[in-house]
Amino acid sequence: MFEILEKRTLAEGIYLTRVYAPRIARSAKPGQFIIVRADEKGERIPLTIADYDIEAGSVTMVTQALGVSTRKIVAKEVGECFADVAGPLGRPSDFVTEPLEELRNKRFVFIGGGVGTAPVYPQVKWLSEHGIKADVIVGAKSKDMLIYTQEMERVAGNLYICTDDGSEGFHGLVTARLEQLITEEGKQYDCCVAIGPMIMMKFVTLTAKKFDLPCIVSLNALMVDGTGMCGACRVSVGGKTRFTCVDGPEFNAYEVDFDEAMRRQGMYRTQEQRALAIARERAEGHKCNIGLDK
Ligand code: NAD
Ligand code: FES
Image (cartoon, rainbow, N blue to C red):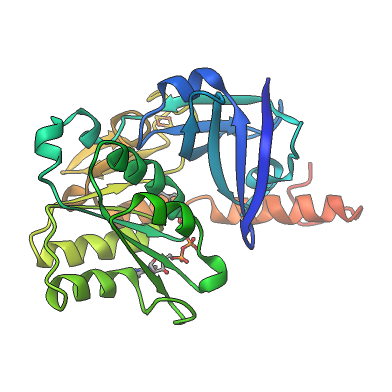
């Protein structure tokens, strides 16, 4: 069973859960993800790996409690178990297989937006462990919503914090900070990696394009099986259909059809909201009357 070893609140509605999963911890690489089922009847939820510890046999995930299933995941306490944790899934980040001599000459800038900051961490940490210090831009709505900044400080070359409301660091979006670093502070990069909301990744890609900066994004498409069988996670990349779970989750950002990916991501929003309303009513002990409570 996958016992929860640690649980912490990182920001409002965002939780860190460290779970005992020694086989996953042994084979996990930066860029990969896991699929979690809170209980026997739970939905399969894909979550990017935020850290792994081979000695402790643990894997860390960061979950934003948005729908019924993510709420079930974050409701679990230390000592309780998840029904399944499957992984590591997906392809590791490309840099893991690049020759180290080449990698050491590469200037990386990572961009983490909101909850997407957590999966940036194992990538920057891996590079740091291999003698490569990357610049990292982290963005959040406000100071209270910033996550993983202390961890990132330890492994990044430079950490640039941005908040939409200016309550900490640079006042503005991550894209404006990237542009400022390049045009005003003379920074030069060979590779940009962006992980966060789809809209952020789209605009980071447009900004990177202005500077001919190669860019990689990690897509968080809807998933069911996570093994390339169901087609739920399909995205268009370079005009071809690709499955995020087996061909990704990381892709060349210049080739991603973000508008289509955003449309597909929103496909089940109504059903998700209804499911949440039903769960809330049940929790309050009322009979739900919105038509789906069968
Ligand atoms: P958010 O809306 O607070 O945005 C985070 C930062 O992204 C902002 O502070 C801003 O700097 C930047 N940003 C947002 N919109 C932008 C735009 N139009 N142009 C330029 N920059 C922009 O983030 P959140 O509320 O934490 O987002 C949660 C989303 O992240 C969810 O949709 C979740 O699915 C997604 N997510 C993605 C991954 C992934 O692997 N790609 C991982 C975890 C979460
Ligand atoms: Fe089913 Fe990717 S989740 S093919």
